Length: 198
Ligand SMILES: [Zn+2]
Image (cartoon, rainbow, N blue to C red):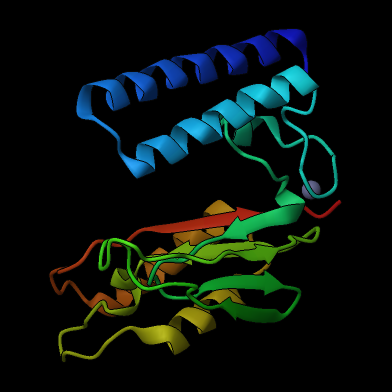
């Protein structure tokens, strides 16, 4: 990690620490804010010990763009953590195979003390991970039929060698074609993460 990048990340964490500490002091103790504060402190501690930005599993550097979007990131792309709170299964596209990675918990917000477990996934070169909301599967056409998992797996298989952005565009185009202009009743969000073949 370059010195400039390191000081930017450290500055962001210190700002975040201030905001969380202020929220705790103005709103009283809050277990989730306290947990977040502990995570931010642990990240600042990693600067002190010289391990900030290193994957906790393999000790390689965590990708810079991922640290920018989440300065608390502790694992490299080789060691993705998936915590799925009631969403449909993520699809791991590996070679010609599509492997569903099932939800690890109930939907967020149903119970206050709900615990969520984490699946570890190692993305190999050429693998793609497709994440999407249930609005994709539950899209209806004008005869009231659901788009459903078999159609998503079919289009994903047909588009599997595409870069992530084109894979997502291809899936969304397939959903739109299926919908035949029927109005949407749920949001549709999709994200593809591809590890480029080396
Ligand atoms: Zn790693």
